[in-house]
Image 1: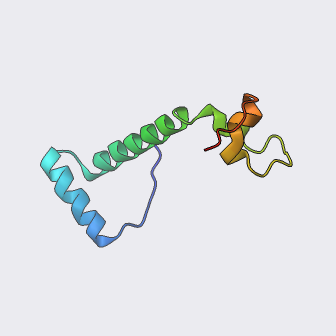
Image 2: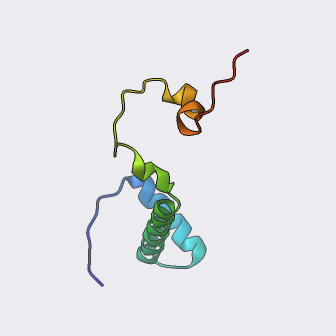
Length: 82
């Protein structure tokens, strides 16, 4: 393991101590578990990202009404008129 020193707010330290005592683990172990959990959550978010978002910005167009008339552009369908 590599030792890291960090600064924490006093209220956060108090909360860590209470939770660690309740779980009967050291404060260091609680912090390690919390960081691992956070990293896992962040990685899951990255995997769940919509792959279509990667397409944003890879082409340009003069179309300015694509959000309202996308069907007519994509499927060549005329817009429904009321």
